[in-house]
Length: 524
Image 1 (spheres, rainbow, N blue to C red):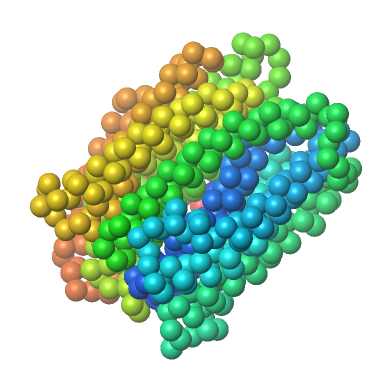
Image 2 (image 1 turned 180 degrees about the horizontal axis):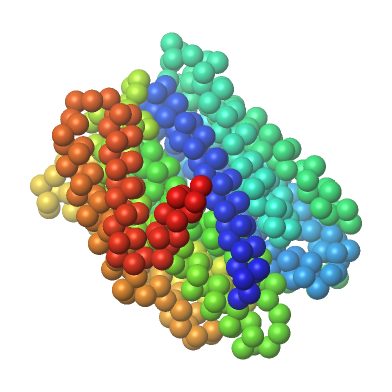
C-alpha cells in the first residue's frame, strides 16, 4: 500500500471514528436520559423491547447490508470514471429500497400484536399494551432511517465519512429533547411515548441533514426501477445473502430479548443499557476502520494477485489498529464495568445496584468483544471481493451456536451455580462472545485461503493484554480507594488513570501504536 493511500485511509478511519464518537457520546447522553426518566421500570422494558421490532427493519435494510452490497459496486463504478452509470445505479437502488421499506413498514404496523408475541412473550397486561402502542409509533421512523443508510452508502463511496456517521446526532438529540420537554414528573409510560415520538422526528432529521450533500455528489441521480442494469442486478445479487445474514443475526438479538423477557423485571432494560456500552468500541473502532477500508478495498484493480496483495496490506494494518483499541475496552468492561455504568446511568430512578447489574452483563460481553470487531474487517474484505455468501454461512452458524448457548447460560445455568435468576442476562452476552470467536476463526481461515494468511500476531496481542491487565489492576485499586465518592468523579480518575497506564505500559513494551501516539502528543 502506498504511503498516500495509507494516509487517506487512515484519515477516512479518523473521520468515521470522529463521527461515530460524536454520535455515540450524544447516544450515551440519550441513554442516560432514558435511565433517569424511566429507570428499569416496566415502561423502560416496554420501550426497549418495542424499539427492537422496527429496529429489525432498519438493520435488515440499513447500513451494514447496503455497505456490503451497494458500496462495492458503486465505488468500483466511480473508480472506473463511470459517474453517469453510478448515478443511475444509486437512483435505482434508492427507488427499490423505498418501495420495499414502505410495504414492510405498513405490514409491520398492522402485524404488531403478533410481533409482540414473538419478541416479548413474557410481557402481559399494561406492559404488553404499551409495547404494542410504542412499536406502531416507532415503525415509520425506522423506514426513514433505512433511507438515511442509503445516503451513508453514497457518502462513504465518495469518502465523505464525517457527515454520514455524525448524522445520528440529530436522532439522539430529538429523543433527549422530547424527554426533557415532557418532564420527570410525568408517568414513565407517558415519557416512553414521548421518547418514541422524538425518535420518529429524529429519524426525519437524520435523513434531511445528509440529502443536500448527496444531491451535490450525485448530479446524475436518476430514480428508476433499474430494469436491465447489470450493476443494479449485481447490487441485488450481493444484497440477498447479506440481507439473509443480517436477518439471521437480528433474529439472534431478538432471541436474547425473548429469553430476557422471562427473567426477572428489568432484565430487558439492563441488557439494552449494556448493549449501548459494549457496542461502542465495536462501532467506534471496528466500524471506523472497516467502513473506511471497504470502499478502498473495493476499488482495488489489477490481477487477482494484485488485488490480494492490496487486501493483505490493508487487513494487516487495520487489524492492528482495531486490536490496539478494543483489547483495553474489553478489559475495562470486565474489571471496571461498574465505574462505566455508574458514571453514565446512575441517576434518577437508576440506582447503584442497577449499575452493578449492568456491569455483570458488560463483563459477559467482554468475552467476544475482540472477535466481533476483528470479524467486521474480515467480512469487509469478503464483501470487497464480491463474496457475500461466505460470511452468510458463518453468520448462520454463529447465530445457531449463540441461541443454543444462550438458552443454556441464561435459564438453567444460574440455578446450577446458585446465583439469582436475573444474572442469566450476563449469560446471554457471554454465550454470544463464545460464538463470536468461532465465527472469527472461520472468517480468518476462509479469507486466508482466498488472499493469503493475515493475522494480528500473538506477540502483539500478548503485549496488549498484559498492558491492559496491569492498568486495570491499578484502576481497580484506585476505585476501591475512592469508594463513596460521586460516580462521575470516580470515573474521571479511575478511567483516566487506566488509559494513561495502558498507553505507557504498551509503549514500554515496544508497541509502535502507543509510541506514535505519545510522540504526537508531545509534538503538540
